[in-house]
Amino acid sequence: FKMSAHMDLDILHTNIHKTLESKVKLASELGYEVIAINNFVPEIKSVKKQKKGGEGQIIKIQSAETFRLSDEKLKTLKCPGRPLKQLTRFTTIIKDHPHIHQIGGNDIQSYDIVAAQPSNEKFWQAVCKSDVIDIISLDFTERLPFHIKRQQINEAIGKGIHFEINYSPALSSIDPQRYTISGAQELVKICKGKNIILSSRAVNAMDLRGPYDVANFSLLFGLNEEQAKAAVSTNCRAVLKHAESRKSIRGVLTFQSVPRTIEITPKELQERLAATAAEKTPNDNNINRSAINNNSKDNISRGLEKTDSQAPNGKLVNTSIDSSKSTKKRHCNEEDDQPHAKLLKTNENGS
Image 1 (cartoon, one colour):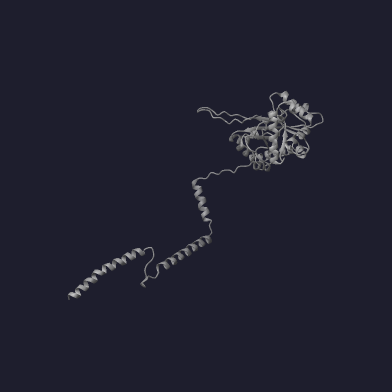
Image 2 (cartoon, rainbow, N blue to C red):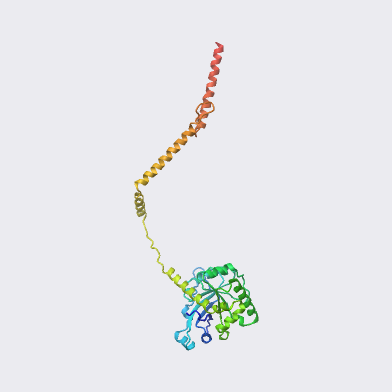
């Protein structure tokens, strides 16, 4: 794509083909060279388990090719002499933790662009750290249920994620217009105009505006002239590069070879352990023996030093672990000698 190619990455898909075709045709007439047909799913339904004996209800996401116009139809809709490339996009509102994991599924990742719209602050923090989305879409038609913080903004910018502002609600009634402008101003102020894209999300063809009109209108959001032009061209191109990188990295991870598991019997395990033990060198065994002998000698010498301590009366007393037993034995011998001494003294006096 050209650096200055104008893009609208949010042409809302409708089941009425005439409405979709009229929006695509008008987008080409207004000067857009790249459009993304958006499959907006308000909520991804989780797989629900029925009662015992029943099977779970499996809900599949429609294929990305379902929302792509045929090449013949696209030729009839685009302006002569102007290029027009169509892309597919998937957008959903994150209302539960399983939704974050479901976005990483192959059915959703097959879309050219993946976008998420957080419903509260917890999921706002989660999508800013996500590796499987390209765009964070914010609903500014009413007050956001969470505060936009610089920390999460910087995390998302560091991952190459862009923030989307839809301008069509600002062209409708007073309340959505007021909320959209105030919310967009808050976002632009915190992110300093970085990684902002402007899209229509037009329900009808009459909600579309030309890229230069959109850039001029976005000055109300706080963007400067250069940032406003980038929001409908170069920033959109960065989104497509991020999407290509996401899909290529996912392809590498998906087809990466898995190490083969080898089964082994207990007998083979014992033989391998024995062979490993036999591979030890004799030098290592000698070193271990000498270390053990040195430690034993040190322990014996320290034990002798403790044993040969000097008693107060000048006699050697055993102060090792068995000292208490020897002390008791010595006391018993002295007590046994005392009656014998008294008996000798009595005999002498009697004689």
